Amino acid sequence: MRTKTLALAFTALVVGLLAWRARSARVVSGAVTSLDAGTPPLARVSLGYGGGRPAATMIVDVLDEKGTALGSITTVGGRRLLEIPLHRTAQAYRIAVTAYHRQLSGVRQEHFLGG
Image (cartoon, rainbow, N blue to C red):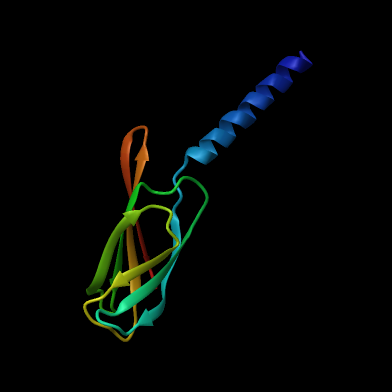
């Protein structure tokens, strides 16, 4: 009886760990960390993630204070540092990320908007 209980507990632990590893990593932070004033200007963007598998692909947009797009890049998920060319500079910047995660049921889309 005790062996059966231990086996069930171990199985539940393994299933829980596998489910945790299979979940999608969410983008939890993003910011423009520096700006190179070349031609074109380059925004260096830093992204932070929660636990889990990274997204299959991501679209990262740099926006000005009004929400107008200044530059964009499409990349593989999980990248923490990006360089994004801008068509002009602004006073303040925000980051918008659209991440696409592959799942057993298909593709799931996630959005992040940060400053």
